[in-house]
Image (tube, rainbow, N blue to C red; front, side):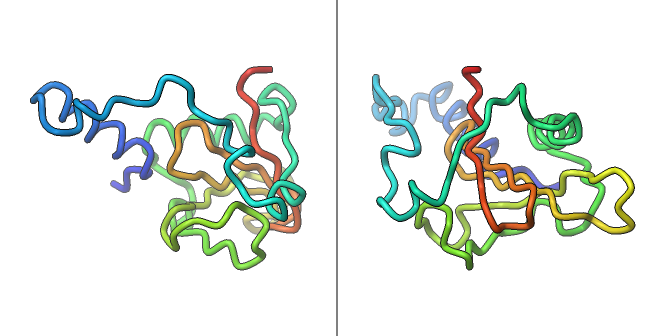
Amino acid sequence: MRIPPRIATGIALAAALVVGGPVAAQAAPTSAAPVSATVSAGAVAAVGDICQSELPAEAHDTLELIEAGGPYPYPQDGTVFQNREGLLPDQSSDYYHEFTVETPGSPDRGARRIVTGESEQEDYYTADHYESFDLVDYAC
């Protein structure tokens, strides 16, 4: 079973805190900057935002699968997303992972995806197969 990076990171942090390892001294900063505030100007213009409540029901299903660690319906789910389009903030080559959002009536995977970053709640939704992205806003 594949564990998404942000879940694996959380598990490692929790383990270090329980054991009292060196990570415990590096607790999370008291004020984390929003993801959009930490990206280059070009990437900010390329990424919009969408309220979690406005996502299609199938995207909610995909987000639940991601949080549960699978199982995923397609073998491509959980694989590294390359960001070849350059629309998401620049990160290391294995930072983003993609997951299928079912498209009712589509004979294949369809065009909808959730792309996750390693930061907690750094989820991007695309309805047009990577032509545009919206950062999911969990506060609305």
